[in-house]
Length: 190
Image (cartoon, rainbow, N blue to C red; front, side):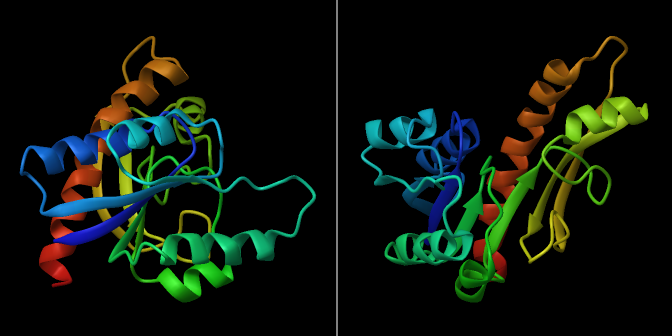
């Protein structure tokens, strides 16, 4: 069984989809902890309701980023994960974190990378006028959404789409891809 720590910043719907897939027996994994940079993240409460350790590690504006990153690595490391899944985590990890978890951290992104990296993938896709967007799961490296692509899924951009409607359809694909990536991780990293 693969031990997964999930990093998130918001509602935790990606994490919930993974937990539900585990409960259904679709993935041989265990979410051993959820860590958020937001102390009020709904995803932390979702985890707590399930009895999963949930830890907030907010970044205080003006504080030292490297110290925050080192502490994040320590917090995550205490749960001894095989895999770290960034699922809606809105902070970049730094050198200390990647030194410890590089090569075993995946991230979901609401666009078909390498197009539209950064935090506004759906908005940027709409502004560019593309007809197809989607979701990507990739291996995290030191760049911004530049790691090796593991999985992708396309989502048609519909007439009348706005950022919210497109993003909601992309999230459905992101959830499926996260579950698939964790499932395949075990097969590829026994």
